[in-house]
Length: 167
Image: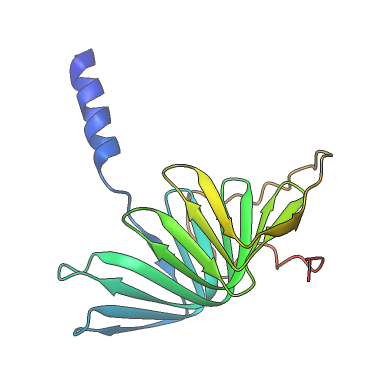
């Protein structure tokens, strides 16, 4: 009995989790297999929550989304980590989020920016190309805006890009 329960748990965890999304309007094309989500575009996959003005997905022949390309006021969250950019590409299969267009990464009170920020979900690390930043050593209270489950909101609940960013 316990062995069966463990096997079911392992099988359930091996199943890919779905992508949950919403937007104001959507256009779908057959060839190539693309979906364009416009206006208040929000998506969640595992612990990555992302919102932007619009996104385009690329799908395989079975209509499984391979990537999600967000543009305009991109805001993303993974756990307590926040990011902002003008553009982001989420590679769904490997869980990599690539942020471009003045990307900013916030961990606690510390802000880092660079030409490109790459967040790797599986290894739980972020790489910053041409980094610069402000590292604070005093703890900050978390406002816990974390969005991981439940119904998606109609508008992005993540905070706007910080005004105080290095130039």
